[in-house]
Length: 257
Image (cartoon, rainbow, N blue to C red; front, side):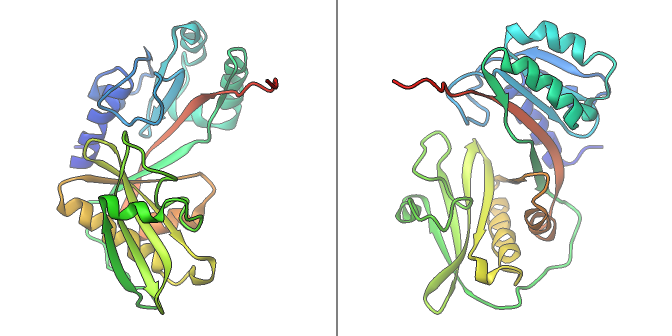
C-alpha cells in the first residue's frame, strides 16, 4: 500500500510525464512524448526535451519526439533505476549533445515520513521569525540565502513562507518554501557557515515542514547525490527519500554577438 504522499506524488508526476499515476509503480519502463503541463512544477516555459524519474523500480521518461527512437531501444530490457547510473547517463548525454542539450544534475527528492520520529532540538535556541508572501521580498538579492528563497519573485513558483533563526539581532539561518505546483511547496535551507552543525538547519526545516502540513500543502525537499549534510537535515527533519529525477537543459551558444 502506498502512502498518502506517494499517491499525491504519482498524481503530480503523471501530469508532468504524460502518463498514468499507476505507471510509477510498475516494473516496465515507460516512455512518452513530452508536453507542457500547466498544473505541474514549472521550472521552464517550454515542454521538456528530456526528463526521467524513478521512485525506486522502473523509470518513466518523457521526451521530444526526436529522442523517442533512441530511447525506446536504449531502455529496452534495462532495470529502471539503473538508468540513473553514470554509464547510462553518459550514453544519454551523447545522444542529447547531438541536439545541443546536456543533462542537468540528478535531483534526489524527499517527502514527509509518516512514521513518528523523535523530535530533535538545536544545541542553541535562536529566536524564530516568520515571513509570508510579500514580506519575503525584502530578502531578494541577499546572497546569504541562495537555497532558502528564489533570487527574485517568480509568479509561476512564488516564495510563500520563510522562517529565520535570529541570534543577537542577526539572521543566522533561513528556511523557505516556494510553491512549485499548486499545493506543492519545496523547502530550501541556508545556515551561515559559523552556525552550522548546531542543529539550526534541522530546527528550521522541521518547523517549516510542520507549518506547510498544517495548511494542507505537501512539503518536499531536494538535494544532490553527494550533499550528505543536506541529506541529514532532510532525514532528521522527518523526510524520507521518495524519487530521483534528471532532465536536460539547452546548451548556450558559445558564439558572440
